[in-house]
Length: 141
Image (cartoon, rainbow, N blue to C red):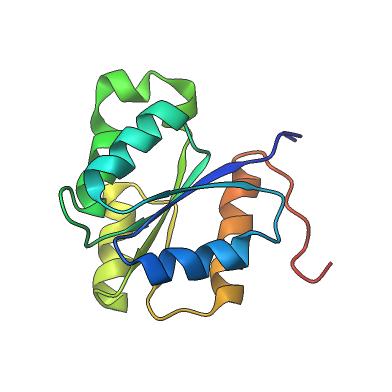
């Protein structure tokens, strides 16, 4: 297991949603970053090397799918171990069926639909981070 604190990027163009997600995640042993559009999301990923990205689909600039496709398909990016192993949870209000079909196709580790329950998001974050080698305490502890 990795003893370091995982770094999570919250990427959404809605500042209220970013604030809400941040409030829920501040109780976990994680470090947090934020981005408000596709370009700043991609720049932050490439410079800060987060372990997990909570990625909105519909953002200005690049969409979440474009950001994810770049991460998963660019040979230069895939050669960087930290980026090849970055976890991605798609967060969107496009509809459960579309999200369920498209997120795995683009290479997301998981997805969650807006509106969502904080407990569901936290469970997905815990699952993805544990698959990446991080130990996250149980949510009820």
